[in-house]
Image 1 (tube, helix red, strand yellow):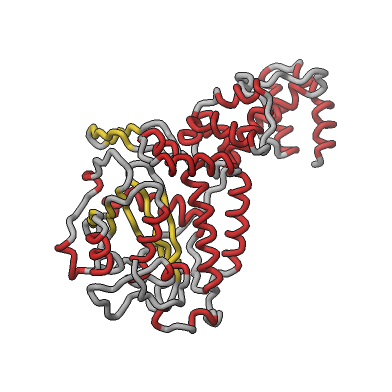
Image 2 (tube, rainbow, N blue to C red; image 1 turned 90 degrees about the vertical axis):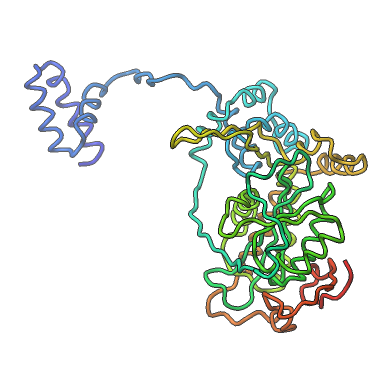
Length: 425
């Protein structure tokens, strides 16, 4: 039956239904549901509401927040890379000012006050229809480097008691697709335990000299001195190259326990939130993809550290099988560095000028454009290798065959993936 026929049927039997006794109403409903296929409750609603001049009032509590306020929240939520309410809510007043400064959001003062009143749970509830969840896969390419493990002290997740920035956890993320055969690109991910400041560098393979050069590049980019480095047990980290570099520059070098991912929990979380969530799990092995990855990481460095609030675990208590965790208020890594007074005056002024100049919406758009470009450069199964992979066989190996104890490195080894690594760093 069409909708019009159903309405005609309803109007024909409505008066008889409303004036009938309970048993007769049951028979009419049985007949109506068999003829129309409607649910019994839907039939009752139709028979009671048909022909009514005024619609029935909507049940439940009236909406507390207006449509313009919800629309403004969506703009801020999208510009903040769809973060959860607990991270967004403390940063929302300042973030709205940033969007207004760059004319990405025109909002009346009363609407702005309404948005700032929203709680973290309200933000999560309102943003629930906008979310899109995608399942991802996990993969590891870490191979142990047993020869020097005894020379490097172990540091577990419970040993991080640092109250100042400068102590980093580092890890490699492989862009190898579904298998580890052949050559593929990698990413060095490093995160400061105190502030959450994150640095990423694309790597041409995972040779020991290149990993050491990437660590040096991260050290140069940091707005504070590098005091300590903690890594996993892979041979790309546990080698004479990196140990010698840390000793010469008075950097404390520690490692996690074997097969204990939680010892590197800070960088493991950033591997997902910063690298995998953006780059994904495709295989990349060409020079254009390498250049595109580094462009993305230079843009992400500003977007993540200046406009992405993070929470730190303050305490954790166990009551039987239940674990109760307490986190501090969400703040950006940049805000945490300012609060800790860990920056020199020159670096403070440099970051302040950068923060005022940057438009987070424009920055996010540039990242998305480069991600689209990177997606077009992914390696497809059965496709011939890119010509840039065949120009220097030695530079394409994922591990170096022989390394002397005094191998010297350079940042140029990272910027030029086909160059030989023989200069000082």
